[in-house]
Structure formats: C-alpha cells, structure tokens
Amino acid sequence: MDESQEYTRYRQDSAVLAEIGRFLDPQVTRLTVRLSGDLARAAVAAWDRDEEGEVGEETVEQASVRDRAASLALIGLAVADRGTASGDEVVVELDVTEIAAALLAAYDEDVIPLESP
Image (cartoon, rainbow, N blue to C red; front, side):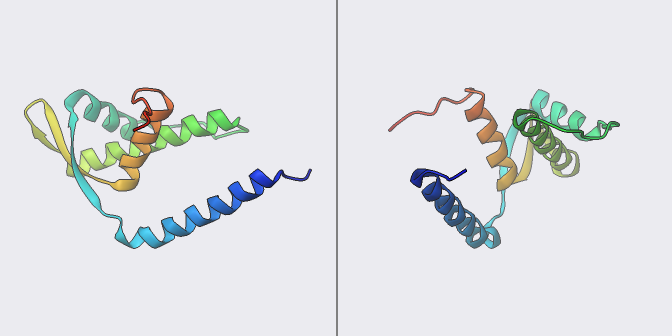
C-alpha cells in the first residue's frame, strides 16, 4: 500500500526527531525530583515485582501499557538505589528519559492537559 504524501513527510520528520535524539543523547543527564512517598513506594513495588509469564502477541495498546509499566519499574529502581526520604516525600535523581516517560504517560492519560499557549 502506498503512503500518502503526509505520511511520507511524517516518516521524514520522525527520522529528523531521531537524529535530534542522537545529538542530545550525550547531553542527557539526571535531574533531582521529588515524589510523594506513596508514588515512590508504588514505583519500588513495580521494580520488586517478578513477572513470571512470557510476553505473547500484543496489541499496540498492550505493548504501550507494558512499556509504561517497565518505565515505572525503572523509576522504582532509581528510588530504591538513590532515593532519600524528605518528610512525606522522596528525593531522587532520575534520568531525563524516565521523567519524559512519566510526563508522556500523564499527557496520554489526561492527568496533565495539553494546553495551547
């Protein structure tokens, strides 16, 4: 099936975005963030959980949900390894990719509305 001109451009745009990512990758660093204690504990629980079953054939939506669960587990690993309690919160350095995954999930789930300036 032939792609429309728009999707051909979108694929080109995607390739440029990937090149920007390649350029930015050496600059990526960790940022210090604060999480509520409840969220930090939930993330650590995701890291500590053993997934026994093998991944079978998935829909695109199922794969996306599994990827988000994996991102949560990686945040849990960071909390377990580097997190420091500060009152009712946990202070932890997260990789910007982990922060981006959390923000994208929040936008997709409408937890944070996408607003036009």
